Image (cartoon, rainbow, N blue to C red; front, side, top):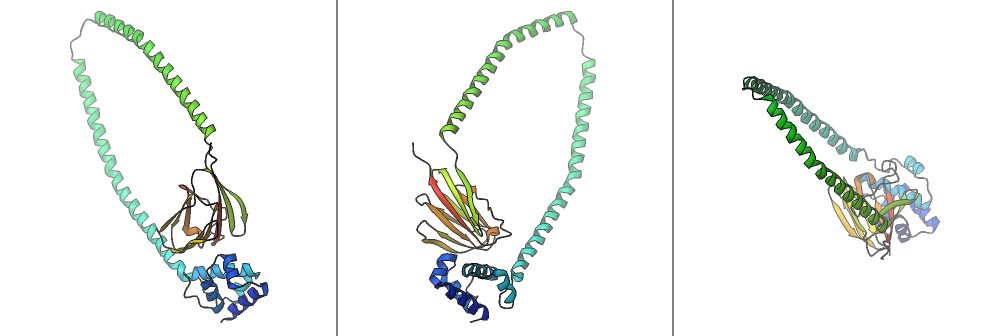
Length: 299
């Protein structure tokens, strides 16, 4: 057992907590808590989570995490190695974007030349049509003008009622649609998901006016998650890799309790709408999300 492990264990016992008590408080698996006390971190998802779990352990037993990390920095693994792949992926992304932009710039001059040629051909065609029109035989201007005037008058007289009728029908139809939309909105209150309380690393939300409560967790990178129901039963716990998704139906539950090990790599969707973290994921990595569900009242 390491010096850090002894110090944490003594603080836990001074609080009167067993490992089971600490597991219930922190939502961290008992085997990970044992690993922290024994200084054995191999069973944990990664170095990143070792630091997050130790921080949560300290807060639960009343020790200042900043002081513990400073005094025992030789025993606690750093996350520098975990950050190297992220940096490399960003360099590759910038390179691919640069190559794509170069191909676009190469294509632009060719497009401009093609447009110029098409414009020149159109100008020649218009000029040729004008020359042909000038050579056409003249007809009796007075008769043509009278005929055109008569046709315009007839067209105007025949179109006016149709246009008035069309405008009237469109106005009535739009008015009817607006009234129906207004009635539907009044009768069917929209679903709402709002944060009602934030404390430390925990945020509580309320889901109201929803017919169902379907939850989706999707990973943008490595993230450790735990999912609990109303009875505090563990529904899922494990490490999600980039692209992994987990779906849950909490329609028959009163709440969902989520332990998110890496908030910046985890998207939470409720009934198809993405949940916004009220606590910055860059400031607080491990976050607990509690969603209280209030089903829509049946009429």
